[in-house]
Length: 342
Ligand SMILES: Cc1cc2nc3c(=O)[nH]c(=O)nc-3n(C[C@H](O)[C@H](O)[C@H](O)COP(=O)(O)O)c2cc1C
Image 1 (tube, rainbow, N blue to C red):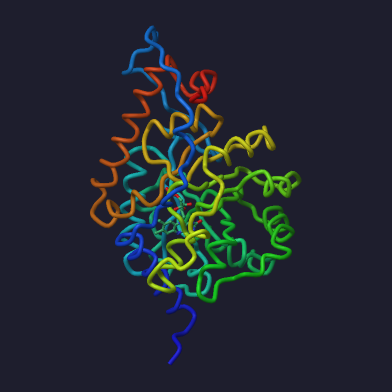
Image 2 (image 1 turned 90 degrees about the horizontal axis):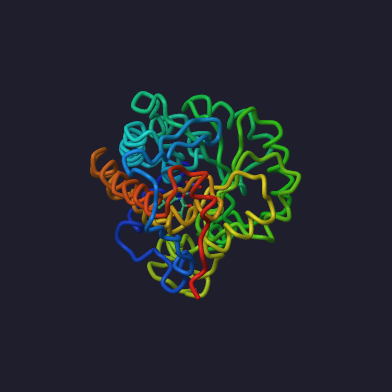
């Protein structure tokens, strides 16, 4: 018997989590490209490490550090625990959080509980999520209700043509999606961010974005988690198309391309951001904030403390990066910039 679409979606979400925890799902040959840049070190820094300020304003909220927990999950039973542990950690650290795709709660009201985090994260910048392939004007009322129900401050729309093409029964018709994004972003009373899922938004995509009413772009580049890899493990139990699993725009390149093409657009750097140094370079290259997804999955299954520990280590390294480069705050870091490795 074929399972109903909601059970199938829950099962797929659970398979994604399992594959992420058990298989090699990172890019194997492609890197983020941040290793090609150095953060300038300043032996005569005039900063006091204890007073370095990582505070920033993003998406209408004040963050204590320029970090978002990347969009991960919702729908599967384990997702509720994951989301609550992530959200409580975000509240503790004063950072933001993106939820996983809320499509499942539009189709099945019972799935909404796995996105319920406001009681443990009353002050967190919380960004809802939906896929561009499924987005159309008819979805707007259901989507607005889903955002309202979870207490979201905004929406991230993920565009993922490569992932969908690798997925069994994925949505492979992206024709007209740009126009639908423009309509929905204009109609929805929430700020909207466009993101990829780890294959990168670069120059070609950005050319389509000039007149789209977006509040931010998350470049979600290549070099970290490869969704074309994950979907092949889920579908075949192995990687049958290695070239596709390695395809994408490295995060540092995506960031540079989008920064040049849309100078005024607030940018999120994500995709393979693993250390405070990666974050420092991305911020110095013009990102407003960084986002980290898969490294937080296992800690989120464990406990709030495990997530806090991972992120505190990351933030501590970022603080030292600012101090050692002579930057007392994020605007100063941006003025420092990065130098290419020769
Ligand atoms: C288990 C898991 C589930 C994810 N689900 C979503 C999702 O529902 N929506 C979305 O926009 N991105 C989703 N992503 C993609 C991440 O937000 C991120 O763009 C990608 O994993 C690259 O970042 P990373 O290298 O830090 O993992 C998911 C990632 C993981 C690991």
